[in-house]
Image (cartoon, rainbow, N blue to C red; front, side):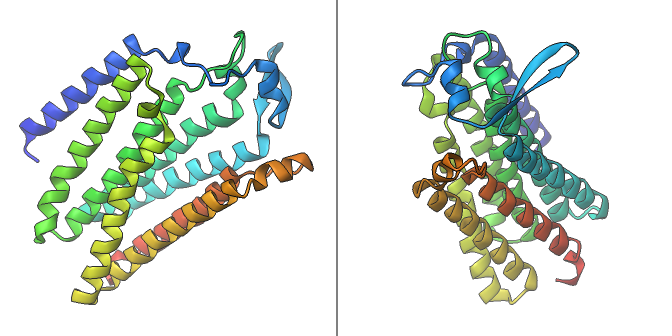
Length: 287
């Protein structure tokens, strides 16, 4: 992408972020049906700690451990990939993707889990539906997968899809940022929802899977088989997460005081996924 376009994209991105922080209606977007702070504490595990004479309620302690571990591992592996990339843009983009994913996981764990009461419920009659922490998580997650698209584009430099991916990735990311900011300003929950994020993530993930299957049968290169394994394993992890969620296993376990949720399944799976990516990407020159 030419420098002029890069500056234009960055400027639009910055403008919409400023609009978000100035005009968002997140502090007025409540759960429906409404949930009181007391009800929030009744439906989740929590502990109260004292920090400098200030009492703080920490939610889902064990789940917080897994999501923060995921974020830390992803960032460390991303930095490691930058270090070993030797100017290989394919590896560098994967490094950036994992750093964004890891940062997003930490933002998500902060608001969805450990400090959810403090951020959404403390001092309120009814708890908020979301927070700016979660909005940034959504943006970082979509940015991460689009960085993976850019990595693929630099793997197949001469392919016809390479140019298209280099255009699609930044345009898709910027479009998502615009949609999320508009949704937060006019308070439309679907526009700032996990479900819409999945729609933006689903297409590129399926595209990358199909493209690498095709590339492997055409070129018989190990890198394409490795990428097929990466995408199939991610889809399987997400499938196990949704199966666990639909079977309502979390509530069954929580009733027995076993604090293990569908999010823990997802985060443990993603930790293993990140480790696998780090192990195979360091052998890139052998593919």
